Image (cartoon, rainbow, N blue to C red):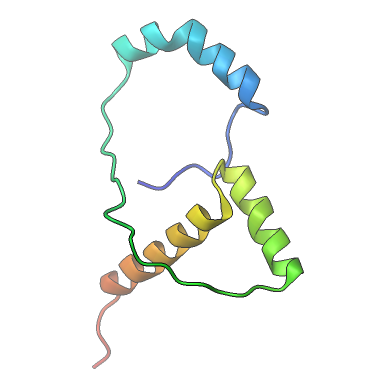
Length: 90
């Protein structure tokens, strides 16, 4: 499941207050979703990015409510999974 690109909440305090006030009703009427958790992430890979690229990544990650490392990991996994969907070259 892909995370939405934007949130209806513009700040975390307002979102927290909303859920504190509405979680019971949402829990009763909500639908179950499938959640995937990352497996053991014991290996690391260091990459170097120029300051402008890193700034862009950090901004995009912040908009999605993620850290830059999480966003880059998500992009890599999407690319890998997408590759399996494409037909093999003849």
